[in-house]
Image 1 (cartoon, rainbow, N blue to C red):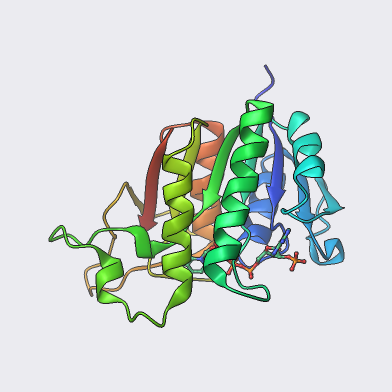
Image 2 (tube, protein in one colour):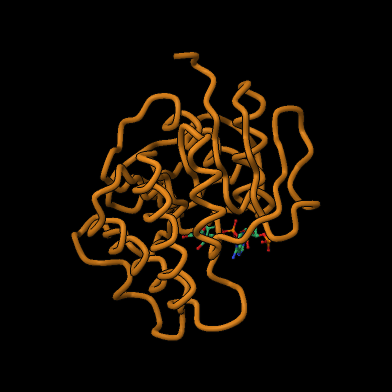
Length: 211
Ligand SMILES: NC(=O)c1ccc[n+]([C@@H]2O[C@H](COP(=O)([O-])OP(=O)(O)OC[C@H]3O[C@@H](n4cnc5c(N)ncnc54)[C@H](OP(=O)(O)O)[C@@H]3O)[C@@H](O)[C@H]2O)c1
């Protein structure tokens, strides 16, 4: 098999998804970048923007058949309840991965991580913060599935920044730097995610990243 992958990336125009698309394309992988507004998907060389909605199971399954790996960077920030959105997205992705037999990597949330003392980060967050709880529900759906999933939780703060390629990886515990800040640039997150595509190390497992 060629070392170049066909990546089905849903949410390819987002803050994180667009950086994954650019990183993967820069390494010569072919990216089918799905979004409801495909004109916002980066137009770099090996990225093919495709209009699509993660809730369209038949279309997703058809796209998944031609892919080596499915990556989702879809956020549950549309209209309506984030919990319902995250759940239905996770279920649609699991169905597409299951029907196609392809690996599924989901951009997750830090809210599902533990703190170094073993306590759950989610218990420290206010109940009004819905997105971390929604992404925790998505992780639960992956855990109960029989697909080859990876749930890649960012650091507590992820934002556009520099591609340094210098960071630490972990599994289920939040990574913080010497100043106690848990942070990662979206560019470095994308670098690590594409590494994970090229060399799978976290199958049916959570992983995380931080400086
Ligand atoms: N520290 C943390 O834990 C942390 C911080 C930030 C983000 N995150 C997680 O990272 C993930 C990505 O976040 P982000 O900030 O990069 O999101 P974002 O900028 O809002 O991008 C979301 C992407 O998903 C697409 N999308 C949304 N609904 C869709 C649908 N129904 N079908 C197809 N595509 C859809 C959007 O494009 P269209 O609107 O054109 O469809 C866009 O490309 C989320 O799961 C979020 O919870 C975690």
